[in-house]
Every structure is written in structure tokens, then in C-alpha cells.
Image (cartoon, rainbow, N blue to C red; front, side):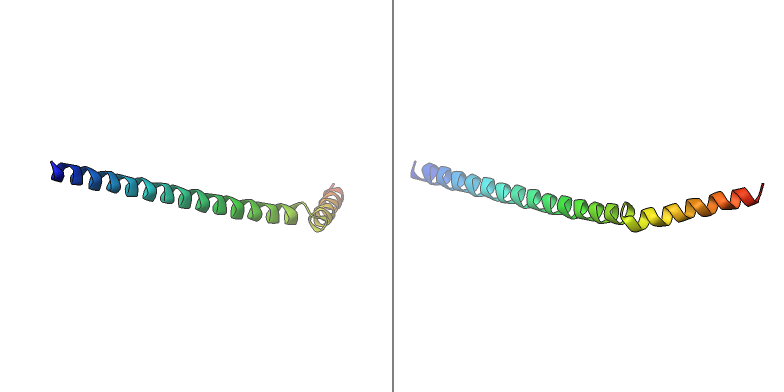
Length: 75
């Protein structure tokens, strides 16, 4: 009977350790996902700042004017 009780204690402690490990792994995965998401959002913000910044608009405006002038001369 004593062996059965010991086995039960070992199994329960093993299960507890296993659940703690799973929780730690889940937390680590969640943290890595949030880091990846933050990096992705930062990358998008940078690209949008470049694309929709004043320099981009100025270049686009000059390109449009040049294209319009080119079409006008080709008539």
C-alpha cells in the first residue's frame, strides 16, 4: 500500500511539473508573438511614413506634371 501512495505522489508531482512547463511554453510563445507583431507594426509605420510623407507627395506631383506636359506635347 505504501508503494501505491508513493507512485501516486510521484505521478501527481510529475503532472504538476508538466502543467507548469506547458504554461511557461505558452507564455514564451505569446511573448514572441507580441514581439513579432510589434516589429511588424513598426515596419509598416516606417514604410507608411516614407510613402505618405511630404517628399513622396512632392515627387508624385512633379511626376504627374511631367506626364501631363508630355501628353500635351504629343498631341
